[in-house]
Image (cartoon, rainbow, N blue to C red; front, side, top):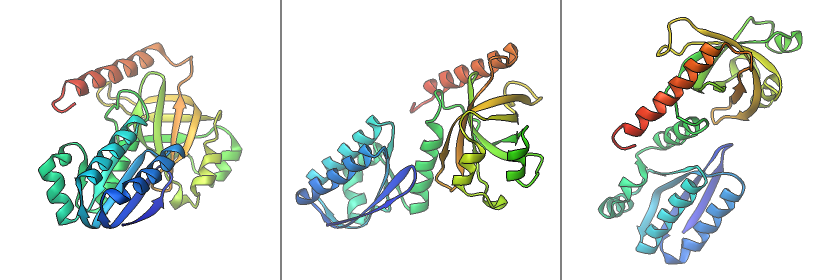
Length: 253
């Protein structure tokens, strides 16, 4: 068997080719453990070219799943060959690990997990727009004098917010965006959480971290100021707590 690796910023794709048997289990585990040591715990196993898989190899796949989960990550199987899908379905691995028909679906599953895991509660505010602006001239010049940028919120609570921004259409790559949203800098934000109230929240926030996202943009985590109106903080905190509680009650949680 041969293992090809493609590394992205937050996840890796391991393409397995040939017969996946006992002899090749150590090689897979060595690759996986090496990735985890580098901080990569989200992985896709591409298995469309696997012609045979035995019970020891199945056990290794489960070990990889557990290892990823232990590090806060996720394992997804992409394009399992007919023999792999048949064996995994009969054994019940498909109930433990997602089997995706296409690489695109597998990537979406990984990105979805990456975006959801960042803040406690996994609050469902994905795709809500965040209007971002800057008070200083330096960063306004970096964005060509535009009055505001539009990001997509991925999570929020009473202490902080997380949103995604991609500057490609503005000619700003991810490395430049990390300078635009440098840790410790202040941003002005306007966003809706419609389950709390109709009017938008408007507040300053301090950038804590800026990480390169899988789409070439950046994922920004920013904390709200201590002077944030108490009613706003309480509303966002209650919302996050309520959504976390509801999620735990839903079937399959």
